Length: 85
Image (cartoon, rainbow, N blue to C red; front, side, top):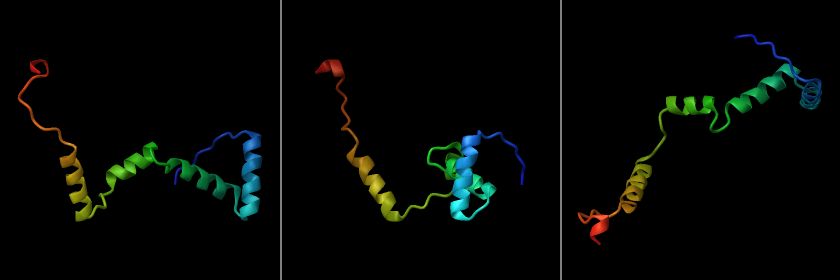
């Protein structure tokens, strides 16, 4: 595991200490949990990379619904130009 030293403002440290005391955890555990939560938020770079690496979990029904949605959204083909109307 990599080790990182960061400087955290005193008011944030006190807030984390209060949370740690209430949850009966160490300050390090609370800080890691909070940082992990930020890293896993939807749309974060880490979450995007994980989603790209994981296989999709779709059923045949999901695929059929997607195909139907695509088909219903298609516009009819026309050989007439916009200015020919």
